[in-house]
Image (cartoon, rainbow, N blue to C red):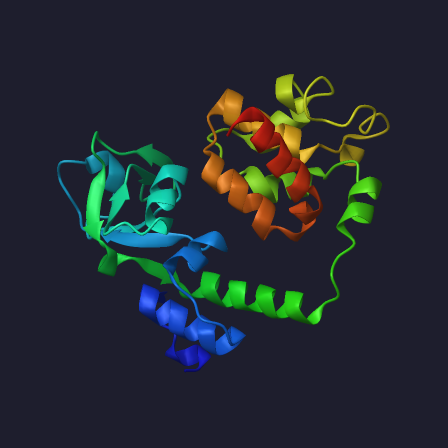
Amino acid sequence: MSTTDLPFRATVTETCAWLALQTGTPWALPDLLRHGLTPYVWLDYDAAFPELFGDANGGYAAPIFFEGDIARLAAGSEDVLMTMTKDAYKIVARLPEGGFRRPLADLRFQKKDIEKLAGKLKHEAAAPPPARAAAKESQEGIGKADVLAAFASIVRLDLDKALDDAIGIFGDDGARVKASAKKSKRNALWNPVTLALGLHDVYRAPLGPLKRAFKTHDFLLAWVDDWERSLLLLGK
């Protein structure tokens, strides 16, 4: 199976078979989810939920990212349950009580996400193990561009403006590294672990996407241990 054999939206079977060829190891649905691949389900237009579809009167591919929904799939559920997704305009939307149920056969993964994961795995296999402890010691925080890349799509607020305003969790009394913006805002750094926890507690950012952010962005890999230790201490 070549790259061209991978559909734009691949089934679980197609995704696992293609990744097995690329990596030389077997894959199953829990493996896909553990590596941060986002599953999608096509929702046909339903007049009962016009706010979900907007102008997408033919339906749209809805992502499954809520931690509970992902955990249920990873545990071997017999069907798909979505209690939260994004609407046709990519805005987080909580679904009606009971959520939407679909058969497992409806799950799809995006070609670009699958290829990106394969590339990442090949790069990691070829590269020497990263000196994560050393990297953490030398890294006080991450800059604004990295913060936006990691978290802007997860929260329903103007994160760019919030970082510039530096109020509350975004300031020196919150996640911003003290004195990092003393000379210029461009020098400002934020502790991503403290910031992510604040986004969850204050702005209700879902933990699932936050967890995946720490495992899918290279600039956050040095912070994974701190992030997971913090979650463990908080019982999350």
